[in-house]
Length: 293
Image (cartoon, rainbow, N blue to C red; front, side):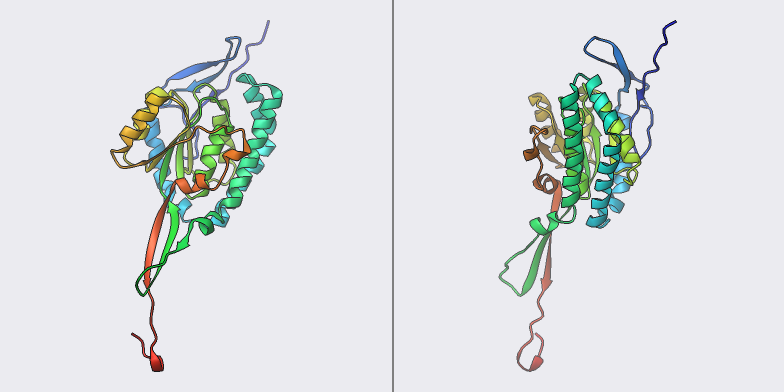
């Protein structure tokens, strides 16, 4: 008798745990030969709301950590991904990729994490400034994390697109909820398994799977989401996101980069989800004879 293989059920990654979708819905992921290769959760509005609550709870702690510590943790993610490289390559091949391209994508994802780990304690020096003012004050502007960021990952990428959007957001001290590619979701939850063993505090990164058409309206209209990063190309979705963002004046960034190129990494992706805080400090003037005025 031929053995029936037990397929992996890819659950969600919320708050450092792997819950099943509260909706109880799943969809079968098919390979090129129309064979079922996995069962994937169809995330719901409630799942997204749970992820937002988890992310918000983690924000103060993560945003308050030293930049050096965040750098250490991003580097640790890269270390753990390196150790599981063969597993990710296999998943990309299952979803239709060839071995050479799959290997290149995983290695580039690892290198991208290292790249942003290096920027964690440097981008503030680039984007901060001492501003000239026409009064007896010092005036400083410094970037600070904006808060909870929703991410719609590119549909045509399994791993590198997801990593390229998550890494700069958390490098800058933000927390996020990422909606994985509906067509190629396997690496996303496996990446959650990497995050769970990489010193990343629970809630900093949350990953859900499902249909963009069902979730994008909720992601862009939720009032406790401070920014949304959209990695797709659907013009109707882009229009919807921008309209819904006006409900709480959340920032929207639409990226349509080729994430497989090293040119698609730079510190400006960190800066996009930063707020600028300007501080005024009076200058104490000292006159003749040491008199202060």
